[in-house]
Length: 239
Ligand code: SF4
Image 1 (cartoon, protein in one colour):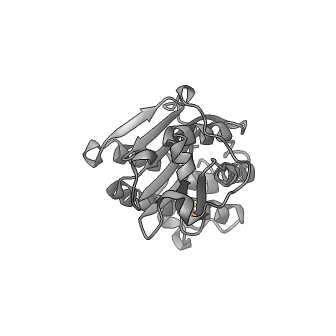
Image 2 (cartoon, helix red, strand yellow; image 1 turned 90 degrees about the horizontal axis):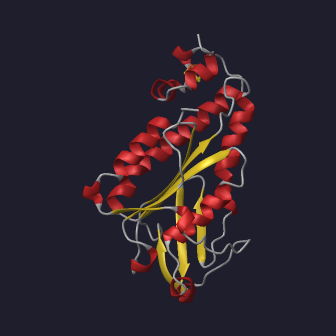
């Protein structure tokens, strides 16, 4: 699975550009996973310590899947301010990179597509206590309201990230997880177009599974296939 590798490369290049601000990396094994509520909770305005990705601030969320051998461990990255340092409306991006087993795209495209969707849907089943997530799948935004209580108890992106990683690793296909929390506006804005690229890959996979004609010259997905390694092979075969 190398469909998302170029976007992974671009994402990591962007966040590692230190001119945007500090980057911290945490080992999830050294972090206590934040408590999971088991279902969504509503945090009232008066109980809110801060909101991120809301109030018109830039926000983006996307998930990338790879079988790259370069990824050998789990990590949590925080680029910009951590939760306890946020006092006003702030931009927000949460990006997940999942290293999986071979998803068998050469032999069973439908199963591969379904697995990718299942991996993307994990985000709807994580409910960190005092951390209310509002996800818009249509706009690829993620807004989070964090309670005063959670801040008092010491919530951090490292704790929340460790919880997300545990949830992803419940799926047997997932071998390693890298999760990025970004609160630097310039970085969030720079990463936003990647969500559209991920959508383009999903739409093309749907097109391929629908059994659409294999005439690239007249195909509306040509721009995506021209850019993303591996998509054309999925549709037309290795030849
Ligand atoms: S391989 Fe060609 S026909 Fe198939 S989706 Fe891509 S551009 Fe369209």
